[in-house]
Length: 369
Ligand code: 0PR
Image (cartoon, rainbow, N blue to C red):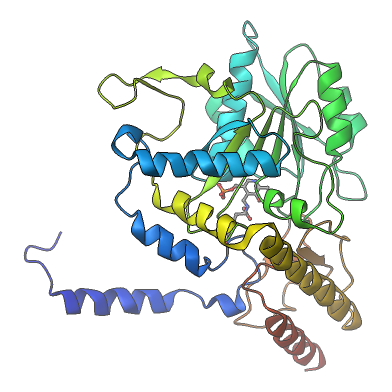
């Protein structure tokens, strides 16, 4: 630490310099996060000091968290769903598997059946929880093969996982088929809709993935991805409103006597931000945002194919992937690369139509150079 404090001006000059070192969102095509909506920023600033870890001190903020859970519950066809605001998809997935573990006792070597396309947070979760992760192969359509999944289930399986909006290819697994399989085996079925949960309900033709399907036990959805909230904000939803209580531990000196959350101190600010976006835009506003992102995705795919970069997959959501050489993308554009070495882009709300055209133009220049 510095011995003597800096002047505010000196300090903020330094911070501004550091901020400038960050990349400009205009060139970021690789991220599932985006620039927060202005109402999210405004709401976030109002709730800066709130701590959901001691909700009795912040009953207003706590009621916002409950409202957020209720909004997602009704969007996902279960008005009475339980849930809480997490720090993001990783925590939601970890807590879902932790919940699954509490539901099946007496298993000494538990396993979960997870698509190979699943986010790496499942690896972390299985590691922490001491669970074997069984990977289900992905079909030619980049979706999890439901029959293969069924084949991997045995008496030690505590949960089945499906992904509604895969990180790498933007695909939705056959959630309806998987839900049936889960029901047949009386299995906990977790749907990772961290990305897709704020896209699929707003598509012209929504793909079934939520509590409307009997068999779905829990859903992860992240406002800090397509929900345009401030970071960090995820949400874990449970069909059974009381399910989370099975994770309760005693918290003797707080305003609540028990808690089921992973973190103790939890920020209320991004929760207020997430709710602000949902209530400001409403279903109509979200439909417009998603329609724009999907249109841009289609335009990007068409433009890239004209330039000789074929699509790797035809995505269900706003993730576009291509066959391309590693040096095909000029600076300062940022794209990412999938495990199968496909160029990956995510058409998030900050990737406006004009940015897609600018990217295509730069790709063309590089190609003809
Ligand atoms: N589930 C899915 C389907 C995800 O895509 C992600 C993250 C997670 C869970 C984990 O969510 P948290 O990161 O909120 O815990 N997907 C992005 C990814 O790994 C996260 C991301 C966002 C990465 C922005 C980079 C970036 O710039 O690609």
